[in-house]
Image (cartoon, rainbow, N blue to C red):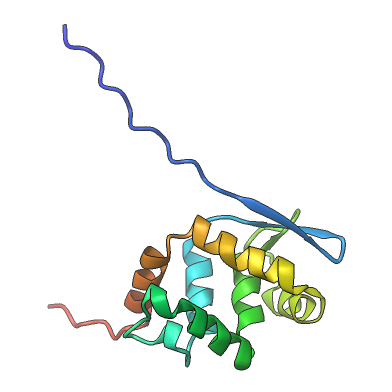
Length: 138
């Protein structure tokens, strides 16, 4: 009789919680719809270019998002209001809430937690793949 093979350990899904204007928000690893929305939010930035960015230039890229007004949109894509499904989330409304209510400390924590939930190299690779022109197949 052969010994039973152990199942590989299930990866722990890291989630983070924040409170902004009395509302609780959760952040966890991106799902496909969020990745698509994030790709749209990053169009026209170096993060959304087909060449992507290196992790070393991430700070410059975040400043670029801040300068062009895309940072609140990117953060709104990542956050999920308590009691609201991703399908029901009003991202545009959340953008305005974040733009006028998010303090710097919490914003920095959200960005830091984002890269804990979503490995930067994998996210950037996915963004590059999603924004590059697909090759035709026969």
